Length: 107
Image (cartoon, rainbow, N blue to C red):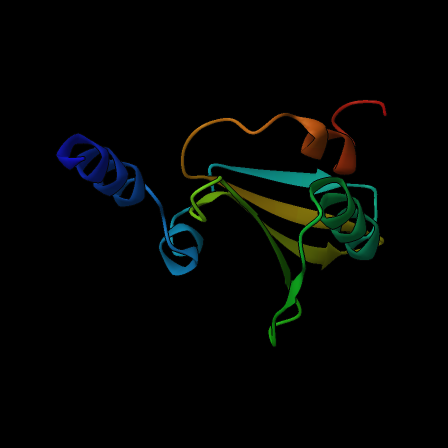
């Protein structure tokens, strides 16, 4: 039982909060021909997650792991007729379906 508690504490210790991830410098910045709304809808739809509309005009999509920690964070800004996507990777890989949403891979 003690080992289970220790493993759980280690796993939860690796979880990142939303604010921790969003305050980091972006891992990558992408520019897409797709509009902000198209990118956001695709990311939210493929990952079955809600979207946060921020007061500054950006939209945030968070991809969380099984423990509730943020693994990937996307901040999407309108840019001309397309969008700018700030991608922050906290840890792990959770597929690459998101790359289709920003136009890096054909769907």
